[in-house]
Length: 383
Image (cartoon, rainbow, N blue to C red; front, side):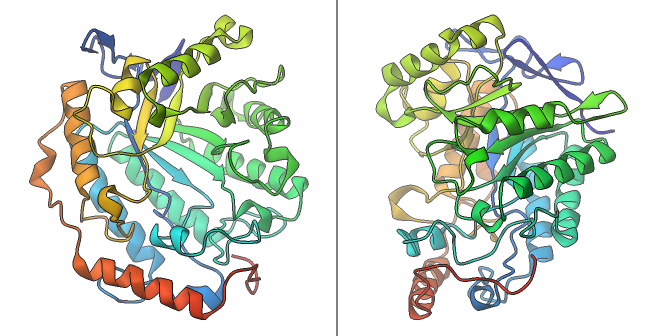
């Protein structure tokens, strides 16, 4: 039985019960929050033959998208046991994290690898759809919620135009509704206004059009919960999300974060209709501090998730190596276990960053530079 996710005011409700019912932490309400992990590369595959050979697993073997999915699915029960409520995915998900640092900045808004789940006209790729189907089944079987990001900067520009963006959105929504996935939140795009998107419809002044499209897509009387990332203070009158994905200055201290979230909640449209706030791409490792990102977000009743960006001390991990946890990941799991009062000890899991992974990062950097991938690289065929 798939979990049924709903919203009551600014609380997330699963199967009729708010998450973490009755729970408080340091005098702050925890009930209704979704603690989550971001996993952009859970279904990663590269359709560009020029860059495809650069991707390898941590053991050095060629990248196998299906193997990657299997490895990711295997860690979900452990995450759940440690207190994780949800997983954030992306249909244009990024590559292993070391690549992002290697090729940036670029003179183009298009990344050389082709990780998009969509063809240029917005058609949903069947192979990618199959991989995400496996992942969504495993997420529901584990009792987790899925935050489903549709578009990401550096890949959205591979779609022809706004019409292709609309077609892609419609095909994903129809697919999820056909599957009966009641445990999914659609996040149209992460960081509209804070990232460079190639299409006007993904920018702050028009993002409400896609949010409304998702809201108005239904089947058998059901529709999907939807939100989008918008910068502070930008809230078009037509913007009617179920969930807010704000970009807030978490790293600037608790007072700045409080001001940002309070200001968002004071916008008339939000004040009249309270709704949950979710921050999907958190960072850190010093979660035991009173002013850590997860602590100040919890105090502000914002659902916080650990991103899959580079870890502490300049170390990075390869998303394919799902069964090797980072120190930041261990610290986060220990922290949410403390905040929620649930879960098992996460330190039963190895917190090893392998030296050969670091060597692989360096080898990748040399390889991609040798190919001169500093501008657009057009892949052959659809994804």
